[in-house]
Image 1 (tube, one colour):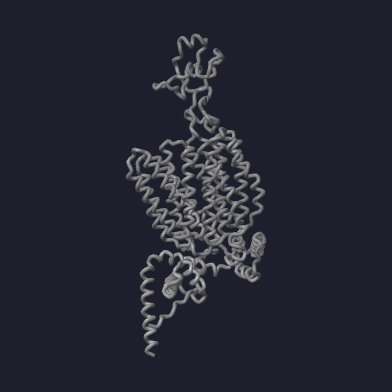
Image 2: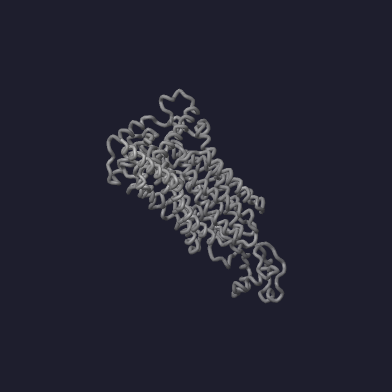
Length: 629
């Protein structure tokens, strides 16, 4: 007995020392434990998601998913030719009055001699652009000897002797009082974004993702490719309005389709890669616009690849999640079986039967639910405020950069080069921090850069340009993260409609930025950027984390769907409070289990062994009993 007691005492002392040792080293593993907790929650959420179980059987990211993602990437690259081409189609040109009348009396005059005789000069010696000498009925010798003295505005059109490209400016003579109003052009584009987001978002939730993607591609083909054949600037604006509609419609529906076909972190990775390829498309457009001298040829080169894409689009399949919430269970089973066949997998029959049971009830929703559903209203209001901020800051930074008068090709190329690594870094941020904290981190970086801009001196310009580039680096990451976050916060039944609704805030932010920047040349727009960033940080803290959650299908997500049958008679706030407490307790149980695993298995100290040890336990994790002294 005495030896046994001594053994227990020695074991307890050794155990106490090991426990103390790991308690000391535990703070260095806090972040690893947070990641472990997040992964455990994701496993628990996926266990309850029947669709995730089916996707596990199909293959989370097999040949079918690869093909789906690639087929949505290619139109994203080509869409840049229609969205950003106006930067290169409206390049400034130096016009001179057409004075070919003098060639009637001096047909052998060179172009320089013609300009020298018929155009007045400025005090610095350069030719005036919008004035010409009044023609006189003299011979060439008299004109050379006496010269011309009286001027008037151009009567016979304009010439562009020093233009290196053929743009909309010299095609339609948008010079000398006929210059296009940039605000009007932006208004037309934003109007297309506004109407397209609402229209295509609503139709996507009613008719499906696939037909609206096809409709958007047809819009690119008709109005994007057709831009090359317009005969006036107003026709160009008309076509650009519908191009904006097709662009936002494709962005909303393609993201919805990809996210509803993928599970886990593959959703975020696919969307980020899509945004990265969009930026690569801008780089490709910039290089091509620099080499192609005629704007019509540039539009043709951007529109022609859309023809084979219309044929390849038949390979895509409708979202099974959308089919199930619409009650089309048999069609959902068909597309899932097709995906399994492409991936060379087999779906167990019991999983398909579970889908059939869960899909019997058709989820009904309308746009009015954004007002009547309290939880959905709060979520959309919060993310709408953040989208307003993101749009306002993006446009303000772009306008600030354009104010320096840098070469448009250089600016677009540098912006694209900066944006690609920024978006790729978001994959790591989302993996380690989750959606909410990754968004807060990028917003904090944007706020810091805007504060630096407030206090930087106006001369020299290079520190300001560098800070603007760093701010745009952070904004590129913010846009990608928040696009993913928004799509995951919205239920399947209203996902596209919700993305269209928050586009209202995006358009409002863009209009506010242009209006404020036009009214003042002070630092007031940058100050508003800082203020909006602080407000966005506050609003983003109000929305729940979605990184460890499966996609929700109905509008009652996080409220009615989470209420157990025994709690149906309770008030919703009471149930939510009880579930919040249970979540805290569950987190504590997992933490205690992990701590005990670290304490009693010191030789398996790595995060990998900890994860394997905890993953063997059945969720929810039960707390370990106290050890004997």
